[in-house]
Length: 637
Image 1: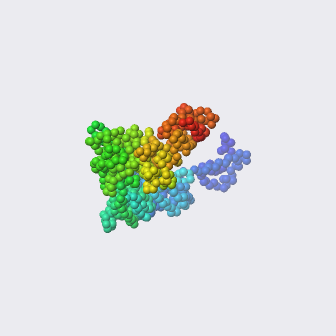
Image 2: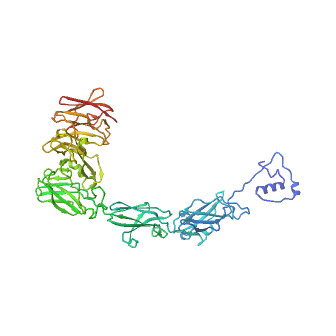
Image 3: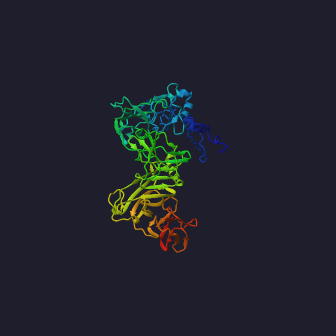
């Protein structure tokens, strides 16, 4: 077989086989075929050839582009034949690839270069039978832009057509200008005054493919016809505008939206019709400014210099329209006062200064003088600031009637001054008092509230050392008179008074020392907050009340909450006080507790010899004046 396939076959059969192998169609005479020598039955061969498709589809002949709705481009063409013009049988192509660009093939010199630079699109339709109309709607295109398009088709053998006929013919590539519509107007415009100098304007955003920003029109001139307006550009990402720094008056608003356009975009910057208008009226609110804070003093042989921070708010904490540039109705200046003491004296006005002046030097200043400052506006003056005294540069925070005060030594004032040049880190201390009910045993109620930057309440502020709190009480014939009332409590005596402090969760008895001549109770403390002068039984010797424990559960994690426990006691005879801590088995853990935040207190931070103790119950023991008091506290980690 391998050596003589031709010798085994007669010439006609050999000719027929060769024609079959070569794919030829050769007609042989029947007689010749009959005369052929039949091949041996045991030796035959069949060979089948499958032709390979190497012919690309025909290119699309009639690609056309037209604009649709805003941001749309419609492409249309007739489905081509997968076999081109080679065979009469028509077959659909396998798929399409469409690309677009904002420049033409003519502009880059070749269709190949254009195709490589153009952008693919998604969503091409399934190919239809040749001759069938087909289309593709593109969305999200930049309105006002001209887009050029081209299409390729491919068959199931991965043969790819040439680029469509129009793209391949100079000057005939399919293109269209994408429609750019005027955007719809915003709706639901509303204007609401949020304070005496600010109006909040809100609206509902419209929908559109190429919106860029809003134009807010403002008219405050009667007849409010928007003939005299100011215009504010508002970012598209918001639907709210805070109109600030306003004086008294009526304000009318309307708003439009502008879409993208020249010079940054190809289309025109088209503006919507304006919304319906809305108006709001700002009325002058009569209120004083906030008291100055950050009061500093520097003394020298030639006088005393007082400095303070700029006032940026009203006394109710509402900020000025522009805190950095207040209007005269908000802040008109400062008044500096001088006195020969910090409390129980008449203050003398020394000088009026402009809002730009934050310092004053007293050429006659001496150690006998104290100073304070008030802020002024059209409604009057602020409360008096914290006082600073030349003698020791101490600070005094007093009640408005000067009857009670908190004296802060110079070395601890820095906690209120903040960082230099950073007003938001300094503290304003506002003092207020409340009427008291004699039936409750409360004779006086005073609160020292601390505001960081004059705005943010900070109840956790503590002094680094002890300040002296002096609470004044009134008396009738032999009775203490409750603050704010004209009637006396039933038979209370000055010797029965005690100072209480609210630590944020409970009232703690701080006791205090009585000065019956000046009619004051005095305690040393590091705390601001609320204090009360109450009727409470007082012993003549050492006394400890378990109610004087700040908290029984210590969580020493450094978060500033319950990191330690403080034991307050009364020690009128100044007896030696020793505090100890034992574990639940009676073993000594701490042999001597240190003094706490007041002289009549001890403190434990949940450690022993500088190392944290384990979680669990611990026994405290406080001894003084031959008395021993015990109880349990818990360390929790």
